[in-house]
Image (tube, rainbow, N blue to C red; front, top):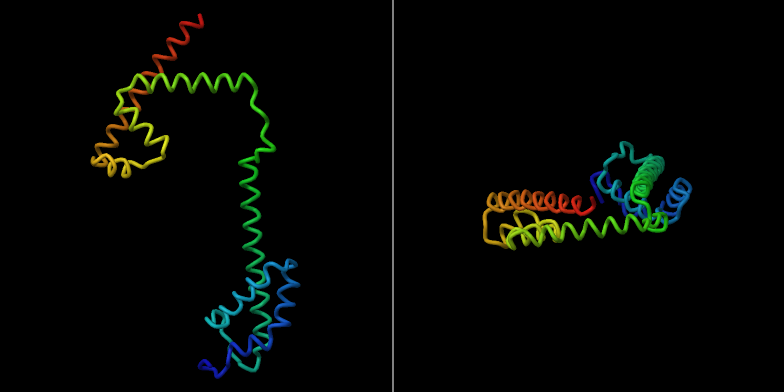
Length: 180
């Protein structure tokens, strides 16, 4: 019992049947009824929308049930909209067209040029870039694992990227000379 003298567990148990029907009619999807009923019970216990007159408990529960059902529908709608936006951004593999043979060839050539450029770098730089970009480690993780400070790792990464860009430019120049 609370300060109003109402046993909220008993009140909810007595009105559970018709409250579920109201929620079910509002949602039009049976899988959300239990979730809304739980939120309704939490709202009753927490008194987020307090009952001013205990004699009007039925009307108050009805309003609360409708409000919780509407909040659930809004949340579900936002979830569906988010999924729809993600589906537009990232098409499923079924919808993705097969790359053309030319795209495969260019991809393989780019990968080969990057591999050659990495091979030309000092091993320490190649390792650092592989861990940063291949494993996705942060500068903090690199610093911890290599026993260095974060500023030192960031400086080394900057120098390694600069060296890689120079090697890639050099290899691209070699590639263009062979094409002519």
